[in-house]
Image 1 (cartoon, rainbow, N blue to C red):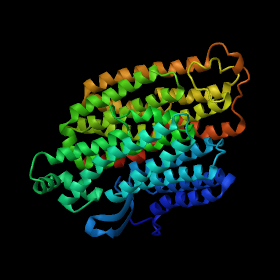
Image 2 (cartoon, rainbow, N blue to C red):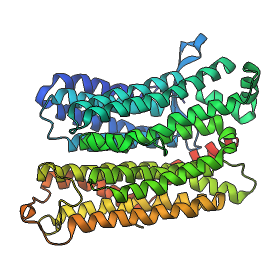
Image 3 (cartoon, one colour):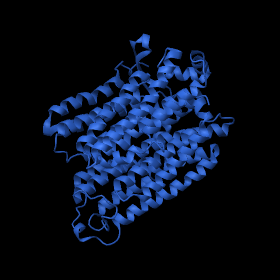
Image 4 (tube, rainbow, N blue to C red):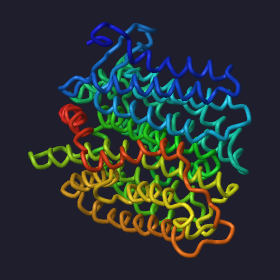
Length: 511
């Protein structure tokens, strides 16, 4: 099916729309936020339209293919399945939340909102591209607006944080680029669909072996690709750029970093690493599982040790994305029975749900931190507060929703993805799953400590007049909280659309 029924190149339009919005915002001066808001709403509507036009069998839909530089294996190839479309919707929602949260940008608002919209365009591009060359363009371009947003509007240590973020991610990308250049030399193709097909029949291994006659080249390529995604997600010990970047970025930018950019790494593992290097990942599954478990458990312990609310939630993000990686590496094993296939499907459904749910919840938590900073002149230490429930009951109640969602309380969105992940991982890698339960327990302790120290106890005198959320803030936050409840109670809204994609992906992967 090319484009939509009428042949409109909707995926190209979706990527171009925020770029046009960015140009208008740049020229709009003090009206830039309004322009950005309208653009983000329009993008969100198009993303939902894409979601509603997915093929029922879970295959790639809305394909657009144009020759670009055929001799170099480069073509303009777009398409989405349930995984890609859900990431488009997530990017649309989080960008909208981020723009709504950024109503205090008084210095160069045109440039600020233009950069936010450019970042959204890069996300849309990366989640729809099916040819390595232009996927990589968007993957790298996304660093530029993110770097400047941290560098120009961030906190006191924004310079080193922005540089570390940029250099780390660039270094990871070198491994990706080298691996795909090697694959191109062996196959004359950079198309994900074609390479996945070759990998599933074993032809890719043969092609690489005949091109490079020495040693286990395919394994080194797999390690290079995994390194690129391990930095982005991140996987410990490649996570050290993240706490500084999240803490120093303005909170609305942190919402984008945690809500959508970290998902590019998980998406890359599912769209690129497993389909093309599944056999190699299966061979090094145990060390990868060890790293994933370390990410889950150490991420939670690191969050427990923090005194800055943004750093607490930054390490908590590392922990939550660790669950995704745990499931991804656990399912990289040949399925020898129907029960194993069911476990793989549960784990993969869990990963995709967890990506979406974590994006919404983490972005909401950083939004609440932005509101706290606005009301207290920049305070965000966990010990700076106490008893906020008295002066601001609505604020405490709504932030409580987001915190309990992050904790994984049944009935809220955070629970569903984690439950499916553990349901899938236990039969496939029970030791890893058992140790990872520690991460759940420590996360619960961290979240309850935040609730206790910020919202309960005596109110300090300077916080007695802490303003509660006004109508505008309540209206903006209501749909986000409603979404947390809705997905928690009716997860099949997403699972029913994603499951055909999960079945389709697992059928074609070779471990």
